[in-house]
Each structure stands twice: as structure tokens, then as C-alpha cells.
Image (cartoon, rainbow, N blue to C red):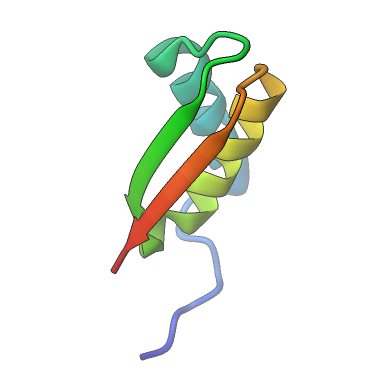
Length: 67
């Protein structure tokens, strides 16, 4: 199986989605931990969400991937 490395979604839109997910959807507060479950195909978005969560002050972000 091969994976196309070209983005299917504009990277700027993914960044905006990640920021919105953390600030609006999760309303993550400083010190809160975050657990994410996601399919491996969501890796680019999950990485951005993780980055935004740490920028928002998350304690620990743990991700479980499935395929």
C-alpha cells in the first residue's frame, strides 16, 4: 500500500481547523491533558491539533492511532 504525500486539504485550512478544534471545540484549559484517538490517515491534522494543544498549555497529549 502506498500513500500519497500530497496534501488533500490546504495546509492553512488544516492549521485553522486544528486551532478551532482546540480553542472552540475542546475549550482546552492550561494543565489539562488530552487523549486523541484517530485513524492513521488523520496524522497531519492530529499533529497540528497536538501542537495547538501544547500552545494552549496542555499538560500531556496522548494519541492512539488505528488503521
